[in-house]
Amino acid sequence: MTSNKGKYAEFKQMMEQNGIELNLVLMSYPEEQLDTIEEVAERSLCYLKGIIKDDFFIDDSGLFIEQLKGFPGVYSSYVKRTLDNEGILRLMDSKINRKAEFKTCIAYYDGHLNLFTGVTRGYIAKEIKGKRGFGFDPIFIPENRKKTYAEMTLEEKNSISHRSKATLQFLNYLKKKKI
Ligand code: ITT
Image (cartoon, rainbow, N blue to C red; front, top):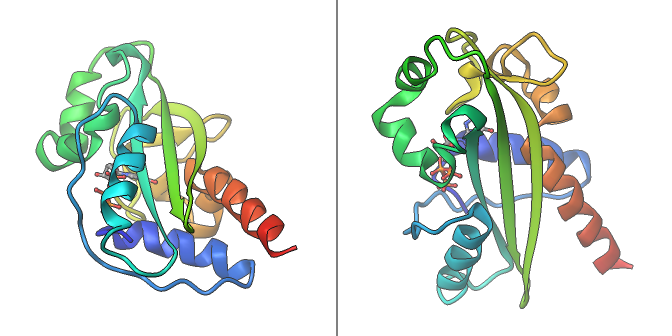
């Protein structure tokens, strides 16, 4: 369940590769402002489990910039809507330390609460680059790469992204459950 079609496209590719069909519930839900994305995801799942009948999962993600003490972090959604990528680049203007990490927490409800997290380290680009993807993709360069997420194909992003690392754990859980 998400309001973000970009996230869905990424999950769809990864899940279908593993023989899992997804049903998208395209909807936003209230997100409480808590200290970590894990807490936000857990709280949202608890709220939604009373509303959704089937097993379902949500994804809460954030961009954490070292020089800005982890900002925007849990405020990523608000910051994307307000400052946007241009504003982040302005905050980072002339900053030498451009280290950042993207983090995803998948919260899955199957009668129990399950959390799976994934992190990809990288850097804030000096300029907006690339047209694909969504959100902060045009300003995030993963470690050991030269391209931003937005300059990569969906498959390339999925081979290294924070979301794919969380999804791998999620898939392992689903496989174990099936045995
Ligand atoms: P939900 O309905 O699933 O909550 P959202 O877009 O509000 O969708 P998040 O709160 O998880 O999602 O994301 C916070 C912000 O970070 C939001 O602006 C996203 O576009 C952005 N974001 C999340 N994952 C990203 C990724 O893989 N690449 C670039 N930006 C991302």
